[in-house]
Structure formats: structure tokens, C-alpha cells
Length: 530
Image (cartoon, rainbow, N blue to C red; front, side):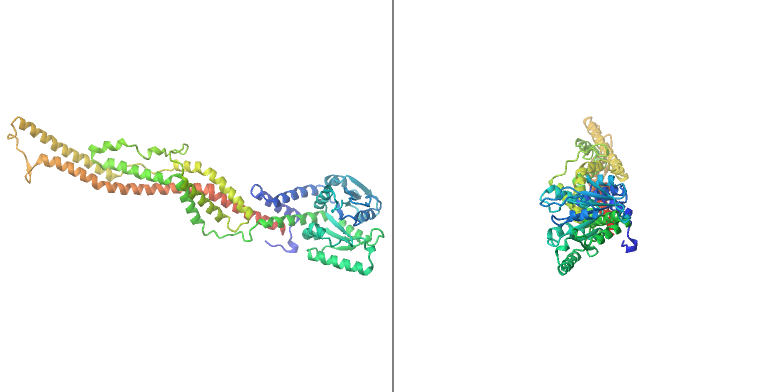
């Protein structure tokens, strides 16, 4: 959403958007910009609670005359100008009026304070600081400057004609404040050392430098603290900032925009990536997870178990007991209880490699087009998901409903026919045994022996029953195999559905959530920086 100049966010809304971005990034993005934004939010909360006084800091290099300028503005020698390096070692404060400045200066950690008894009501509410020299040879002085530069409402940078173009000042302090042009004032001090033409040339050159650094809206004033030249213009500029009572708000708004701009570097130019390959990636991930979870072993066990039971029902009854000598391959896997582990073997090296490759593809697909920090977050998310996958997959396989374990009607019919054929063969065998007994008693001529096409009926019953039973078993075997394969396919679909649920819950959803957080983060950053 683009906002026009009249539709810019209020400071409250801008900080709320920045806070949302920080909250989304918390625990996801390990980048310094998020920490800086978090520190800014803490600063904003503290500064808003300390009233509407305007804190103005005079900053500059050694010899720029900022302490002399500070004393001239304060009306007395509060900060003693130094004659050798280092000079100003700690910050000094001059306060105009009563605006709860003590609490504010306590927060700024400025111990040296001076109350200015001035009859100028336009400066009432001004807190003026004289900072240590930014180029001090003492590290603690430079660190103090950096700390206070981040906290004050208005920064007055004091330059001198000799070092006004110093690259260190411009690159380290002025150029980075391009987004803070409205809360910055640049003063070219000691112009009394130059003639009029040289002063105009210095001011024009300084103006050009600032314009090129993005500080075109920053005012440039010429002063001479020793003679008082330019001090009325500087006082008027400070009075304008104080009377507006917006310096603190403007500084915080500029800081929020700067923080948002820094975090925007971790947003993709186009957050909406092409997701057309998601289905293929999910199918590939599900297949790899299924292999790692032992789904092929379960499907194979289901098929062998179905064949075993089918052959038991349709095979020759005399030999059925032999199949019971081998354990049911499906029962050995301990399936059907989601609360207990299966007996499936762990995934081998090949399955683990395929799973790792599938996870990388899913991660890369989710991170397509995202900045490196978010791709790193997706990598950590995928690693956490991989650590939980083994147990979740095992429970999913163990708890999968493999379908009703019932014997098909045709197998029951074939089994009944097998028993009938066995009875026929048994009847023929008993008949033959009876004839043998009659033969031993020489009574075989008494009982007539029926024949069919010349074949004794008892023999036909025995041989026909046995051959028919064996032939029926052979005919039923491929039908049993077809049914076993069909059941295996059904079980495979159910197992893949359960594995797909695990893939969605443990891999796809976390990666999608991370990518969605990127979108929320970038939307909040855009609002904060608008």
C-alpha cells in the first residue's frame, strides 16, 4: 500500500507496524536489523513517557568550536573549551524552562546540567547538549557520541572551515542520516576566520556535499561563536523546533523509517512466488517419507499375508497345516496400535539420502525468491522437522487402518468345494479299502463293483477327488494373488494418505508458515517505512 504525503502513518501506527515486524521476525530472523528495531521500540516507549521537551545536541570535531557555540547559546561558560586533545570528555546540558528535564537527562545519562534563566519563551522546553568530540583519541568519548546521537531529538552538526568536508564525518555520521534530514541542522562555525567570498564558497561547497548525500532539506547556517554572527538565526531555528513540539516525534518517525528500510533488505522484491510445483514437490516428499517409514515393507507384508490366508482357504485341505508353520508376515510388524512402535527396520542409507534430498527440494521450493536470511530460517525449520519425522512416521504407519480383514466369499466357496472333493476322495479310498478287505475274505464276487467307462467307481472317486482338488488349488492360486495385490494397493493408498498427513503437518505446514511470516513481515515493514 502506497501512502501519499497527506496519508502518511502517524507515529503510533508506524511504531505498531514496526513492532509487528519485530514480533514476526522474533525467533525466525537472526539478523542485526531486527535487534536494532527492537532497541528503537524500547527507546520510543521510554522517550514518549518523558514529556515533550526538545533535546538538541551539538556534535562536532575537535577544534570546531562547538563548546564555544554551546556557551554562547547558553549565555554562560557551562562547557569549558579545550585547548588540546582530547577536549570535551562528557556531555554537558543546558535546560530552558521546566519540562521534567531531570528525568529526561537521567534517561540520557547526562550528569552535568545547567539551568538557563532566559526571558526568551520561544526556547522554553529546550534541552541543549554539548557532546564529546566525535574524533577524540579516547574510545569512550567516541562511544558516548555514538550513543547520544541515537537518542537526541535534533542533531546540530558543527563544522569548521578547515574540516567541513572531512570524509570521516560525512561517511560515518552525515550520509547515514539521509532519512533524518528533517531533524538535522548543519552549522559552519568560525566563518569569522574567512573573508566574505571564501565564506560563500565554503557554504556553497558544503551545500553541494549535503545535497549529494541526500540531505537537501537539511538547513545550513553560518555562525561565528566568538563574534555572535549567525547566532540569532541558529536560535530562531532552535526556537522553531522547540515551539513545534514535534522534534521527538519527527526523530522517532525518522528512526522508524530507517529501521524499516534496513529490515526491508530481508524482503523479497516479489513475495508472491510461483507455487505451481508445490503438488509435485509434495508428492515427491510423500514418496520419500513413505520409503523411509517402511511403507513398501508393510505393503509387501500385506500382500504376502493375503496370499497366505487365501491359499489356506483355497488350497488342498490335507496340506493346509503346512502354511501354519510360517508366521503371518503382517503380524510380525505389530501394526494397528498408534501408541506402540512397529517392528519395521530403520530406514537404510539409500532411503535416508532420498529423504534428505526430498526435504531439501521442499525447502528450496518454499524459499524460492526469498532473501538469504529467510532461506536460512527455512533450513532450520526443515532440520527441526526432520528430527521429529521418524517417530511421527512410525506412529502414522502403526495406526493406519489397513481395512477389514475378511475372507472373500469366492474363497469360502472354493474352500467348501475343496472339502467336498476331499470327502469324495475319502469315500473312494474307504470303498477301495472295503474291497481289499472283501478280497481277503474271498467275498469280492459277492458285492458287484460299479464301473464308469470301464474304470471302477471307487478308483474314479479317489483319483478324481484328489486331482480335482489339486487342480482347483492351482486354478485358485493366481486369483488369490490378484486379490492380494489389489488389497496391497488399497493399503498402500491408505498408508500414503497417512504419510501425506505427516508430511503436511511436519514439513509442508511449517515451511508454508515460515513463508507466510515472510509476507507478514514484509507487509509490516512496508507500512512502517511508508
